[in-house]
Each structure stands twice: as structure tokens, then as C-alpha cells.
Image (cartoon, rainbow, N blue to C red):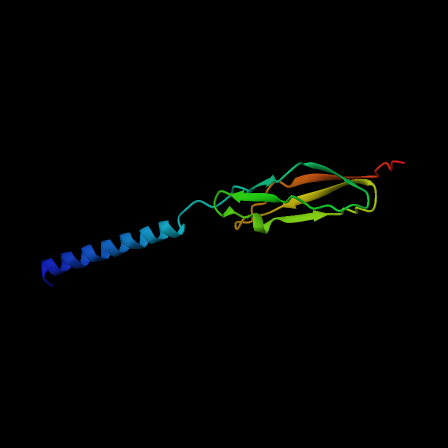
Length: 119
């Protein structure tokens, strides 16, 4: 085989190998695993008082992850609130990112209180 052809084949192989490595880096194949949990920030106050028998509209929360970005739509909010019964209740917010890192849960207290009637 001609020396020039051999040299060009070797250069072509090296170039293609370099492109493959660059593609792996762009896709994250060689990057470190995502071990950072997302952060939840509640909208509004962390404690809300409502009249017993009244309604409660939750202000919600936002969640941001260093890799996945805004993952607020994935937040799970759970509560045992019974607006008809006086007491203190909690709304718990939690979320996980695509790498299954769980955020530190955030809690909003809901206080159901009887209101004093005038008259």
C-alpha cells in the first residue's frame, strides 16, 4: 500500500475517534453522575390561618434542579387538611429530579380556627 494512503487512513481513523469522544462529552456519557438534590421554595407564607368551614387555596411551590432546571410541574403536594375541623394541618411538598435525587421536603402549616361571631 502506498505510504500516503496509509497515512491518510490513519489520520481519518484518529479524526473519527476524536469525533466520537466529543459526541460522548456532549451527551454527558462521560460526565459525573447527578447527585445534587433539587431545591423547593414555597410561594407565599409558610403558615396560613383560615376560618373553620372556609376554603383554602394553596399558593404552591417552585422546584429547581441544577441539571434538570425548573421541575415545579413534578412537585407532589400532600395534605390531610379538613377545613371543617379546627386544628393545625400541614401541606407537604416534595419532588425528585430525573436522577431520583429527592429534595428536602417543605411544609406549610394551615391553621383552621373558629371565628368569633359579632352581635
